[in-house]
Length: 192
Image 1 (tube, helix red, strand yellow):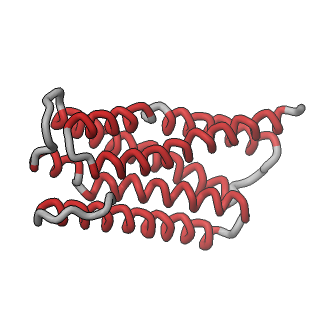
Image 2 (tube, helix red, strand yellow; image 1 turned 180 degrees about the vertical axis):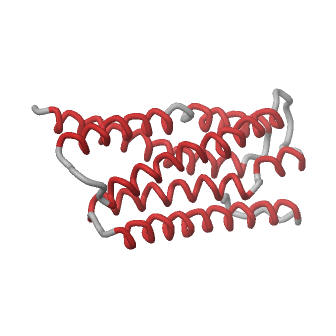
């Protein structure tokens, strides 16, 4: 096995970690937003917190292996490489600025108390912007996966990543906003 193939294995490990993070985050987040008691909320919040190292770890593997593969085989600034690196760095920064902060804010408001989820706790959990941001990061990662696979040109590469980020982020925001509005008005809807 050559160095390029070894770098590719590490690249796929980064892919698994990153998309594993997004899958678990979306599914556990759905359950957290639907939690009726603080004990349920703590359990699902703990699942979200367990994913913390997956995004930075996956991103680190992606960056190191991507640089190695670019140096070993690809010469020049190809759209799939540049868009991938820029998007990955944006994902990493936005996770630290929005996702990790939201986790800490939810942990602080959930606390150690028992009983039903109070309106204040529900407001913190059902804040649409952080969930929408996480959805947008998921969509951007899906866009990069498509761009890496198809090796499209500059305009298409950028458009695909931006459009998928907007689409998935918009869906997450809308679902969380509907859930929040349903809780606020007293009607219980399906988990969002």
